[in-house]
Length: 84
Image (cartoon, rainbow, N blue to C red):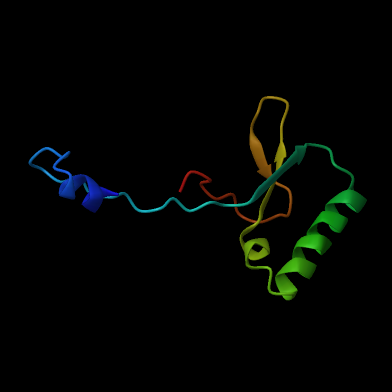
């Protein structure tokens, strides 16, 4: 698109740089207090998908949401910065 605008002389003297594409992370957030059975089933589905080459499943982050809006790991892993 930038090259098209250059050809049409629609750009100012400085050429804008294209930004890198953002990384999209799959996230599931459930209400805190989810039963152990439901948690185990959710983790089993994620494991099954990852084992069958569903690339996004390996990146899936699962959180429990507190009443105050905080995020806790639903699977016992270390909490990562979701914003990158």
